[in-house]
Every structure is written in structure tokens, then in C-alpha cells.
Image 1 (tube, rainbow, N blue to C red):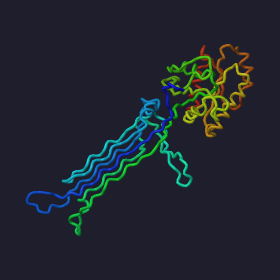
Image 2 (tube, rainbow, N blue to C red):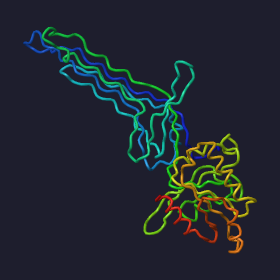
Image 3 (cartoon, one colour):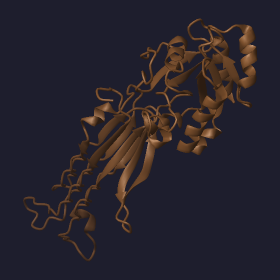
Image 4 (cartoon, rainbow, N blue to C red):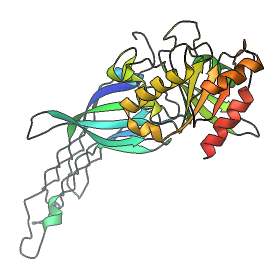
Length: 338
């Protein structure tokens, strides 16, 4: 995986800024012997904020910026002058980024991951750490019984912590299949995406996204996810690293090549891997495409239909010669509308 530009998991350490202290100042003017309190408020410390940005497809920029420290707010001064607020640190992240905070369990002493939130819209913000509030200056504390308060609030302390950021690719349709099932070829045919294609396992080492135009200006986003192998949920092959991307897809298109020894069994193995990883994936709409059908005649296709799994819409396709590609796009569009 070395050298890949696709990074979908990163750990960062962040610290928000302290609030500036309020000022305990008294007015000093000519001819005014005892000026009243006029200490200004401290400025707010900088916060650490994630912001969705559709220009980003990966978390690679954070691989080299794992420490994110905001500045402190300025202290208040005389004449009720407030200190300047520190700038927030805005971290751009791709849509589909999930943030979790590493927190130590006080009872067990073990580190746990606590969900903070997720960013799914362009411009959407998620605050990881709030900056400390600035302290109030002494003029706030003047009263009938205390005309000269010498007290001003210190600024509130910032916060710090370690966070895991995970990217789950946002796509309408996810392609599910063993390595070399024809997923990348299909994506290259139905969209402008140009994934790497070759006749060996694990050509695809990172998710590829493509926009698929159906008809009448309608379109959806398709994700080619690296091939699953039996035992992937236990970490075999490329393991669960890419299974998380399937969690976000509305429709799953299972792909099994026509030269499979047992199409139904292959489909059931794939379904089993997804179930072991996350049983909720079974709630998604599913379709089956039997790929690489350019060498089959109508009679053989009819015969093979009896060997397909029951209860799942299926279609025989060939990306190379364009067999049933439009029909597949229409079926996927209909499934998305449901």
C-alpha cells in the first residue's frame, strides 16, 4: 500500500487555544483622582474545526499535519479594550469523514473511541475542540458595595485530545465482488473514471468514484471498491480496510463473472463477508450482475438463470461489448428511487 495517494484513516492530535485573561485596570486621567475600573475582556481561544470540502477525496493532507494547535486569545487591557479573539483552525476534509475521540475509560484504564460526529455536506462544520472563553475584565464586577474591584477573570483553558478521522466514501452504488470480477472495467465504461485495469487480483488498491449518467440528465455516483476475498472480515486479503466504504452506499451491486464455478455460492460468500463485518449492510438494496458474458449465447444465458440466487434482481452484462449496460443503469436508478 506504500506510495498510495488514497488515505482514508488518520490519527491527529489537536489543541484548542486558551482564552485571554480579563484586565484588572483602573481609569487613569488628568484631574480624575480615582478613576473607576475599566479593564477589558480577554479574547476567545482558537477552536479546532473540521469543514467539508468537495474538492478533497482523501485525508492524505493530514498524514503530514498530524498536530493541529490553535493560538490563545489576547488579554484584555485598559479603557475596556477587549483582547483579540484567536483564529480558529479550519481543517478541510472530504465529504464522508467521521471523527472519533480517543478517551481513556476511568474505570478500566483502557482507551476507547467516542464518536464526535461526521461531515457529509460541502461547507458543513464539525467542532472537534472549542477554544477557551476569554475572562471578563474588572469593570464587570463593579457594584454599589464594591466600587473598585481588583478582580478580573482568568481566561478559560483550551482543550486537547487525540482523534481518529475515518473516510467513508459517499457513493450511491457500491460495487461488491471478488478481485478480477470486472468492477473496474464496468466503472470505466459507465463513467468518465479511469481506474487501473488488469487481469490479476487486487489491481484496485483504493476506491474509485465515477458519475454514471442514466438518461434525461439523471445521474448517480458509483464506487469501485477493492475486491473482497473470503475471510476479509477477519483481515485476510485487503481486509476490512475497504468494507467501511460500503456502509455509505444506498445500493450494492454484486458482481460475479460468468466463468465462476458456482455463481450462487460466490454471491453467498460475498454476502457472508458483508454480514460478518456489519449485519446492517443486509438492509441495503442489492442487485446481481453476472459479468463477462460476451462469449455466451442466449441459450446458455437462459440455462444459467436457473442457477442464480433467488429474490435478487439480476442481469447478464458485458462491459467489453456493452451487453445490457443501459439495462443495468436503469435497474440501478430504479433501485435508488426505492
